[in-house]
Length: 256
Image (cartoon, rainbow, N blue to C red; front, side, top):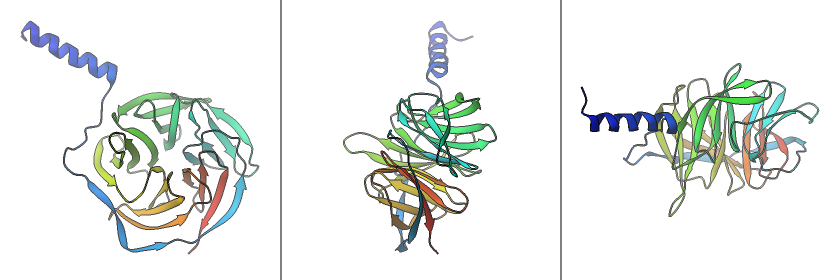
């Protein structure tokens, strides 16, 4: 039997866990850093198409067949835009108030990040609403871009303080933290795409998009973004799609 004082402490811990939910445990040791490859080079791209978007606070992009989802930050819904017509075909109600990114896990399940809530969620889509299932907190960091590549979940976080720290989290499908990579060579990294082999990271500060080898944690190269304050990026199987805070959608071909 536990003493009464110990029982109370255990009860407080259990209640706190149920109310606050689990948190990712960050290592106190210096994390591995994303470095620039010795063979780093400029990447040539070609702009193929532009789709006009209404003005809002555009964040992450997600390609869903012939449609592309546009997350809309603070108090915004997620627009589903038909890529052929360029028209919005539906709106999705997000989990909370500042959706950053959505990435599909399976047919009707998704990973979702929310900046204000400081959480990574798993969620299911019920008609036109995302409903949370499980979540982990990244507090005191804010999660931004996220991408699931069918093996690993990658999430960008910003930790505000005397100077903002940028990290790339590598997690498994159960949102268990496997590795933290310090991002020191990309200013204000925003969102992520996966092309089947490499990771692409946008910069909100510089008009650049970076290609990253996740096996070596090296930046292989970069190209100049067609938009200022670049946020969302997605891979449709052949082309990249980009947007910015107040920008339209751009279809981009990576040359060579």
